[in-house]
Length: 134
Image (tube, rainbow, N blue to C red; front, side, top):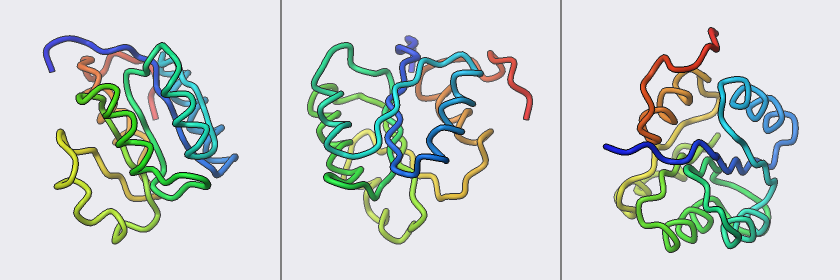
């Protein structure tokens, strides 16, 4: 990606504890993070400006699943970077083929460093820009 996108990340995670830890780590790395805990809230947030630079969503969510959230986000911005996280990788089979550009799929539990590198790449940021050292 040639140009950098907004560093605003919409994080959609229904596990409150995991969401808070992940949001804190991302903020410490210099990202702006908005946290919502279900698919309906994510769709509502995507409907209001500004559109985030990246969507990071759990696959299984109350009220609307992560794929529905990602498709809605992509209807607003066809190039919206999407990271899908899941504890059930078999449910993510084929998603990469359905969406273009394909979302990144990370299986829980994932290494935060891997997530951070994926975010940096998707946002067009140089790797190593942040001071966080795991």
